[in-house]
Image (tube, rainbow, N blue to C red; front, side, top):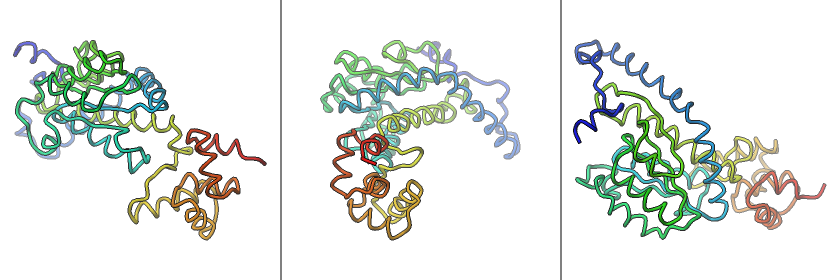
Length: 302
């Protein structure tokens, strides 16, 4: 196992960095920055695959399916982070985007020994969600061989769910197990084997794309405006007013009236202003259009 592990690009030893600890701090920072700069290019090679995944996920979520991330350690934490940011950003329903981490919530802040090595734990975590064929499970693993991520993808695929393997090594077991493979090969890390660095950055970039562009496809934005934002605090309430202003060009009084008429729902308020309808009509039009504001606007008379 040691020889197999050490052969992975993400685990490779960089002899040219063997004395990095003797360099001035600024030089180490420059080296690290130069390493990080190559990550977007590695992601770019996978864009066609990422786009195919997004279209497949959006089709299923449009039918009521869920997006589930499953990973261990850094990979699991990144999945939980991405999932947790979808409700305030896109007003997704609870459980619509889910992050599973080996070892459960305790593993977010500390190591849970042995959790990442358990396929059975992944099966139990997924069974608790009662997966359907409209759900998507994305296994996330830098090495592409983490048993928890592998177990999640294998079990989900057996249940008929869409499966995606996101790894940072080529020809990974995770990619082979999944219906869709995304392998962002970033090479050896600045600190040997520390895959929270370039590999973690690559995973974060891909997860950003998966959730954000899927939500765009589902009508959660109007142009590049977050029209489904959940105004749960003062900052987001101010952002809601600004979004309505940018989308409509309306003045403060009209914006406040529209938001009041729609219970603070940004998308509905925009429709009230642009289409000249009342709050209940805006809600009906959006429901009939599947939540797509452009479609709702096109369906209004005049």
